[in-house]
Image 1 (tube, rainbow, N blue to C red):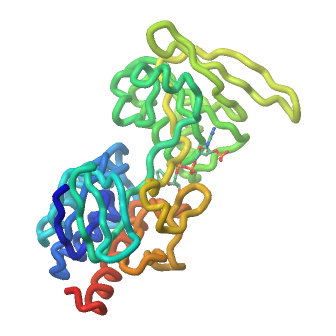
Image 2 (tube, rainbow, N blue to C red):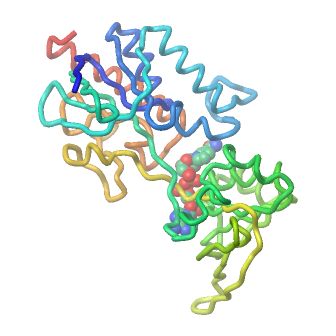
Length: 315
Ligand code: NDP
């Protein structure tokens, strides 16, 4: 297996990774960044970003990530295709294997691998994968023009996906397991007032049916304390928007994670328990999970990496 030595390895290409690359690039550390499975991260599969400071009219997620990438490259970041497939953080330099074929020996590592969409765990989700089941409305919504779709979830993502789909589909059902939405007030209002969206509170999706693709969803509606009603709802597409799982599996032997898998860092900093290894963005953030907070933590991780390299005479 080939090896390469770097001062700072950044894993992941969302706002955290790119911001870390901008800062370490400007500090002349010549960072190497591997983009991971989804170059640009989750923002590339969202629509409009309205709350990233500096864009009064909003900006598309893809454009924002392209801009961040260009900004990182301008300062010398070496941005590459590739996925970190295993890690050995037992001693410095830390060994990260890329695509099972190359080992990067890094003096510092910034983990900004983000999080991946969760599924309900129904067998039917696999059975109908690519045949009516999706976790990305902006990727697949196009196929449901003038059709009927359901979105599962009650958070901001679910509301965003429902609104996006409502612009294409003729009817959108939002399947929410609680009697209320968890989303921000502004998103709640948009969903509730949208003529094409119907919110099904206290509903759970328990299965899908259809001959050659999704034709409907089996629903259970809670009625009071103990009663429930079961019925089938015809739909053409079934979208999941129930949150995300942090992409921390390959680091679990070396770093502390919480029960969901979020990497635990020292309060208020991106420092993990391994010196010189930092975690930034959604992979370490169960609370805020915003593009701007991810970018902020990427900045902190870069500053920490620079200080660590300097303190250990590695610059
Ligand atoms: P959240 O964790 O906020 O919401 C997940 C939703 O899915 C909840 O309604 C939850 O229900 C529901 N859910 C989870 N598991 C299941 C299940 N097994 N069956 C049925 N429903 C389930 O995730 P989001 O992805 O929506 O948001 C993550 C973070 O990103 C949040 O902080 C959010 O504010 C932020 N965000 C911000 C945006 C913006 O500002 N533009 C856009 C998108 C996300 P329950 O409430 O019952 O737990």
